[in-house]
Amino acid sequence: MKTIKFTLTIFLLTIIVGCTEKIKKSSDDLITVDVTKRDYPKKDLILQDFMDVEYVALETNDDFVNQGFVQDIGKNFILVINRNDDGNIFVYDRSGKSVRKINHKGQSGTEYTDILGITLDEDMGEMFVNDLFARKIVVYDLFGNFKRSFKHQDTDRAIVYTDILNYDKENLMCYDYLNKKTSFFLISKEDGSITKEIEIPVKQKLFLRQQLKDEVNDMVYTVSPGEYSNIIPSKDGLILLELSSDTIYTLLPNNNLTSIIVRNPPIQNTEPQFFLILRLISDRYYFMETIKNVYDFNTKDGFPRSFMMYDEQEKAMFNYTVYNGDFSIKKVIYMDMIRLVNHEIGYWYPLEAYQLLKSFEKGELKGKLKEIASTLDEDSNPIIMLIKHKK
Image 1: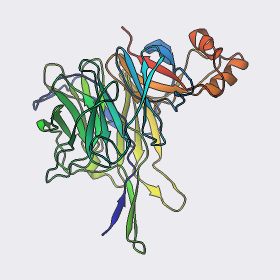
Image 2 (image 1 turned 45 degrees about the vertical axis):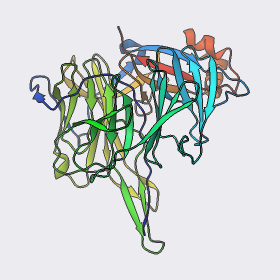
Image 3 (image 1 turned 180 degrees about the horizontal axis):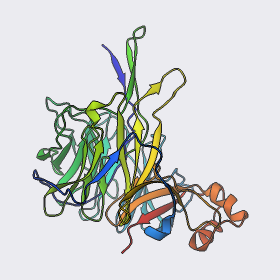
């Protein structure tokens, strides 16, 4: 039997919105993106000019040394894990003070074998751990006590949940990476049963990945270009990104899907394929990129990218560079490294302590970031930069 090795790096989001089967088109506001174009005019931006920024210093002590990989942020708590799959879950309060460390990695029914993501439900005092390898969700309270677990729903369409988020009091929203028909689901928080399917029209399910078949060892290796999100919070609702579709939709609070971005040429007509990824949306800008679906297994090089931005005020596309205004030098913020959170906190971005210390010693920092850096040492946990929508 063949062994399939997946590299899936898709990150957790938390948003609360409505659900619908109706689709409306807004032709007047529809953004059209030529995914093959590279030479747009260049524009330089300062992040703080269009987003608010907050810094959270994660407390470091003997029990709380970690890589600062944020899973979810609520009004009172921040959940953090390591990238090395050690099973540790670090619970911080919203100011970054350590609260407790939890670890239930194992093989029993009350444990998880790995953590793809964690969804926080502060109202119920619960966290949902997505165990991808076991294809199950394990639910704990915020003290680490086991409450229940349920499997990813098995259907004839091979469901594998890669994005899971807090939708409402009763439901989680899930993105299914493998499903060939319906990618977005609402499932019950109690037993995992599917309560609603949200269909994005596609002709054929396509995957941003390349595979190598090893006939000698009877294996198939799969590589993908890295991290992107299929569910994106915006001021208007919830953006659903299905890469196999020519259209990107917003799920509005009034329970309608409306098209906001259309790609050209159609994804089904290109070979090799150019996939369109949406990264960040502010009141004015839509940051996005295209990824060419090619990879050389010999050189381990591929998936070339092109970064662009749509300016809603000027109604035009640009190539761009974004700088962090809390540096006195031109410090680039790479928009493909940001991690999604919710409607208030659009994104988070990790700042390593040792790098901040170097900048501090060179006199390159300003304001609150300079103040935080003055308290760090090289072994401090990362500083989490919260990129928030302006009020």
